[in-house]
Length: 217
DNA sequence: AAGTACCA
DNA sequence: AACA
Image 1 (cartoon, rainbow, N blue to C red):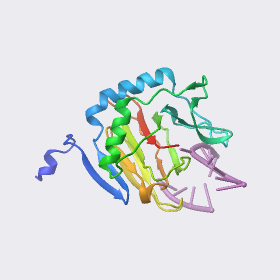
Image 2 (cartoon, protein in one colour; image 1 turned 135 degrees about the horizontal axis):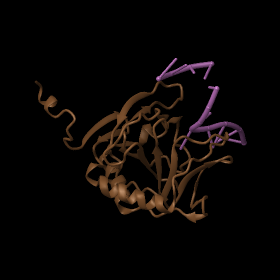
Image 3 (cartoon, chains in turn yellow, brown, orange; image 1 turned 180 degrees about the vertical axis):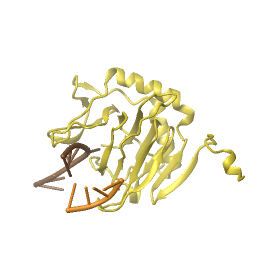
Image 4 (spheres, rainbow, N blue to C red; image 1 turned 90 degrees about the vertical axis):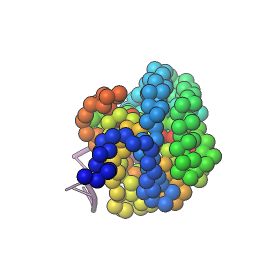
């Protein structure tokens, strides 16, 4: 039996996988802070609840969203944009907690993007069946900053494509504690998430929570 | 400038 | 599951 088999299914510390130029999958990077991250998310959601936003085409998104930080990403019939205030309640978004911000900065540095200074963190909740169609993150002002994506709870299949929507996406499983960073040549790649398979995560139950850090302004 | 992570 |  190979040594690796002895560790099958056992957390053996962070592992970095370069999946494309400028893109790194940091397996298990967020595991040490998992409880603090979940606590911080609960506090944010208490003040800015998850909601299903409307696409410009008038369809409710299957993923429920909220934000924290200087600005949050919003969509409604008038389009996509970053806004300083939560449209539901017209209050500023909750501040970005240090445990979230420091994790994102650390992951970015680990992936080769030292000096990342996120001003927005979009928090996405996937219930079973929720998905995210292939799209680009292009509502930010400065594409020199990477995107940092933290996965918590149930695993999901992430699609990582190319610069053209027609480029066939590759698939990667994103598990609890994984952090995916993409920037540089990969900053504008099309990406998405397949419909979430049902399951029961020991900390988060029947859901996946994704944190996406950006420099929007 | 137009279109958008949506749907069938 | 990907496509038009």
